Length: 254
Image (cartoon, rainbow, N blue to C red; front, top):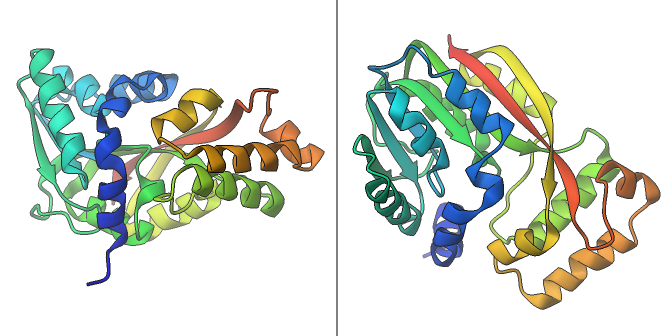
């Protein structure tokens, strides 16, 4: 039987699950602060953390809402969420293993859908967004946050290349225009979006995904031999650390 992208991603991330609980990039940031601030006044809400990874969205959301359901395709990630939530005394987080493209929930099951740094791994962005809209109540709040690709083809090609070399389960970083179009097609109404620069420390960025040394060397070769415009845009540093853009989209279900 042919392995699906979801199965491949789950297999890839299972050995790395604990690393995403402790990852500084995932555990904090102004995007996470913004998301948490939006939850004020939703004390009874049922929240979906879609593609929860290490669970940082769930941990931030849980004190402000009624219940959080953390969903991920990787069971090892969900186990880390259960253990971490218990260790922190958080009792209103439950977990469910599922792919974004096939959510096992009824229509309108959630008041809020939150998704951070997950969609670039999905097999089908459009199907995942349609499912997110389906399980969200009409008028419900949604926040999607992800790293995004530059509009320039040269910059886009470089970014996708180093992302794939680092992590074989990477599918695509989408441009802001692609995100806006896909969200609208799925039935979301965009209220606002925010672009931010995200600094990535090269050594921890590659260690977190356990990138083999030969592929780390290939990434460094691409960085060192990139056009000057690429080096400038990505702010590539001597040790390989660089910057990427992320976007936060705040939406309502139409």
